[in-house]
Image (cartoon, rainbow, N blue to C red; front, side):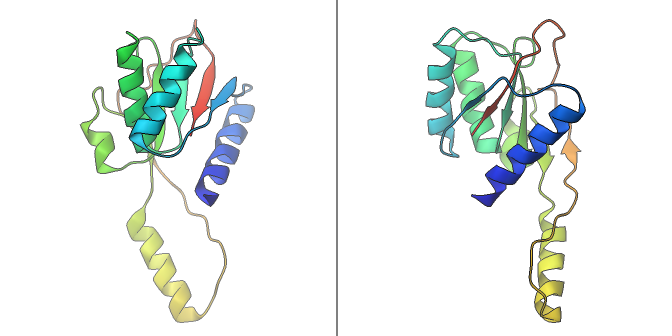
Length: 147
């Protein structure tokens, strides 16, 4: 899962640039049920994060469910942001803010690389699709990565 490592590096770099950092990590497989179970267990320790950064939209879905089950509201109690910008993100309520993977651009780059006989890692910009899930609360600055 190269994407997970790179996403964490990007999260850490962006937060460092803003003068802050993650206060913890909730590790889990990248699926709805594992994320739901991991976030429930995390919340059951008594921690109340101000925000959760999910490494994909399936994790965000499980996170939403766990938060709701523990009586926490998105974004009023906990802000949530994710990666992928999948169709799933559009179904969550409130709508999920998600860094969107530009699949068409990736396909074009992959095809051009294949035709040119070039190999290697290429990185491209991934836009943030803003939903209603990121209403940051000034009095709860803690941020935790899930995934």
